[in-house]
Amino acid sequence: MATSLMPYDNRDGSIWFDGKLVPWRDAKIHVLTHALHYASAVFEGERVYGGTIFKLREHSQRLIDSARILGFEIPWKLEEIEAACIATVKAQNIKDGYVRPIAWRGPEQMGVSAQATKIHMSIAVWDWGTYFAPEARLKGIRMAWAKWSRPAPNTAPTKAKASGLYMICTLSKHAAEAAGYEDALMLDWRGRIAEATGANIFLAIDGELHTPTPDCFLDGITRRHVIGLAKARQLKVIERAIMPEELAKAQEVFLTGSAAEITPVREIGDYKFTPGAITKALIEDFDRSVRGLEKVSAA
Ligand code: PMP
Image (tube, helix red, strand yellow):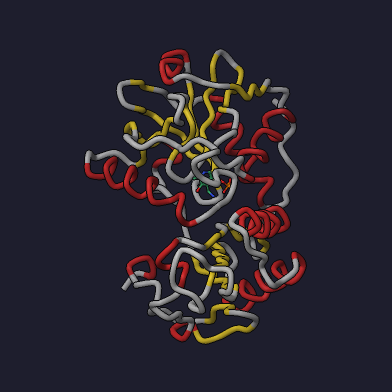
């Protein structure tokens, strides 16, 4: 069976679980774990390129920050989390793959209050290819409009990479897939363009890059990296509120994320785009930068 079709609980290897590497199939939790019932969990998604975790410091810090936003402290320090991620990549002998740390509240209490729960953490690493089908990198993906909106910052902890926030992402992605699309574009509660179900969005309009201000969704680590790459190429990057009708002005659109990397978009509802020079140049810069290679000089 191809690895991607193997259920995630039935694989060979080791998972870092509460301080040590355990056999993959033994990394289990009880059904009365608080996180399972009340989504008291925060997680990360990181990529390994050539055996090195890209932006490990930023991801580990965000994990700690997300937990604090949810009101708990991960009982491992930043450096310990980093070392644990590196040790797991090594144990799994992964050169190019994905890292999934998660921290959650345990089963000591069952109910909305969770003050007495213990905090657990695990880190799993596996071989992984592209998030969308490989040909998406050339042609671009097709996106539907999500019927769910990103919530306002006073209705959900929008700065945290928290499990509970993904409920509307899965619903939106499933609806898009059922209609024959690859992903969905979510607006925010004000009707502005927000992000995809697991990635940020950029629009190229007349040679400049525009991206929504991340005031109610994740300011992605890849997003910030790509803004840096664009600026190094003397491209103007404008962070602002973007309304859906503005898609009519965009020549190119792409998504960014640890999983999505840079994925061109060729369709959003009735709007059509063609992956062009800006997207291609940034993909090239991105591919070189994640492997620690020198960036191509600005063309
Ligand atoms: N938004 C959502 C909802 C995501 O799940 C992700 C992936 N973590 C992103 C944006 C992009 O974040 P990053 O570049 O830090 O992976």
